[in-house]
Amino acid sequence: MPVRIRSKARYQGSVTPSALNTETDIISLGDQPDDFILEGQVSLQNMASDDAVVLRIYVAVDGTNRVKSDELSFSGAQAIPVVRIPAVTLAYNAKPRITVTQTAGSTLKSFPYSIIVQVMEVI
Image 1 (tube, rainbow, N blue to C red):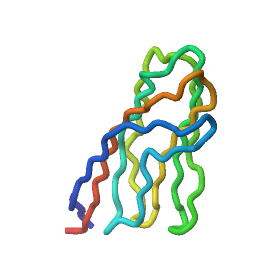
Image 2 (cartoon, helix red, strand yellow; image 1 turned 90 degrees about the vertical axis):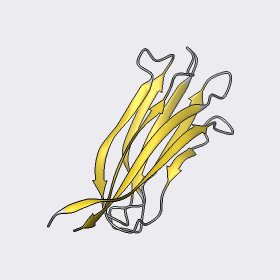
Image 3 (tube, rainbow, N blue to C red; image 1 turned 60 degrees about the vertical axis):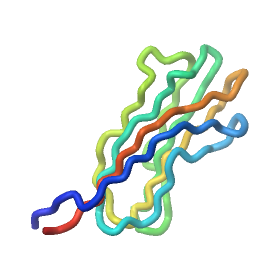
């Protein structure tokens, strides 16, 4: 069955955790009109030598309960600061959530991001 992209949404901005060890949403989506593709980037360009962060991705495999699907930890200034979130096809009710938690550092940092969501449809 052939499919095409029905719609595309861009989510761009920057998040700053309110405190150390506070998981902060970069993006948190609900159900979509149909299955969809999600991809993007998160920049760690503002990290300094004393910083540490954890990026987490959650999905609702059963369509209801989000569970962790990925977790990446980073410490110090990053030589390659952009973390790529590869394109992944998800069920319409996967409810993806991407978060950042700053676990160390003398000042809270901001984390720029760019996420693209492409909703598919059967033609």
